[in-house]
Image (cartoon, rainbow, N blue to C red; front, side, top):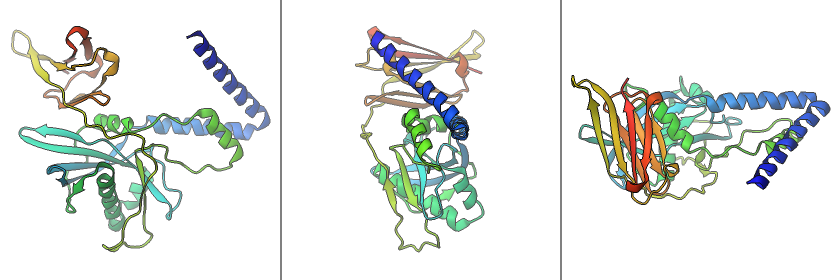
Length: 313
């Protein structure tokens, strides 16, 4: 532990020395680097904004209704030019249910400039929609219906859920020192998509005929597709003596799990997601809006059970 701390301290010291040297030898480069970090930090913190929602169907491997949330997100780089590939990011598919209907939701993010350019151009808008559907088929090994409709709502689910879903697909940021070295040697750096679950699609300059094939380039993929089981759970609404609902209590059984650190819990006002990598995944629509700040969770090791208590708003 001591050697690890010393190593980290050494790296931090080297980094600050590198910044000091840059500030003295190249003030303009230093200012440019700092401004770039602030700009990227703002982009990373910004939430995706809904653009439109599509309804179509998954035909294979299992027929199901599919909603595709198209959103704009500053975290996604813009294409370098009209002839360069258009980056986009696809979130994990989430199965949801309302009454007896079961459907799937998939989030797709583009850079805001890309969607704004298509706002008044129906041909470009249709191209972006077709590209998103083609990417989903390629990445998830789905067969989708080629017919779709644009819903009268812009998003299926909550923005918080969409952001959490898309953030899970982002990789760790590039090493800052390496990034700064590149800034020193290149006057202008082109945006690179480092997310292994991002795809790039080439937008044609002219109108695309039905016979034209879109170019799909997967940058890289190291994440194996592992099917995760839905754990057994119990959900109940706890009320007071006057039968006024006070809180939601959920008990989730996680056999084989012996530590809360293995569980990834995300809660928004209207939904909940629990994931244990390569083992379990549970997504629930909550029957009432909850107070996320007052939500608590505890793990009972002897019973391998996670208990989440969510006060209602």
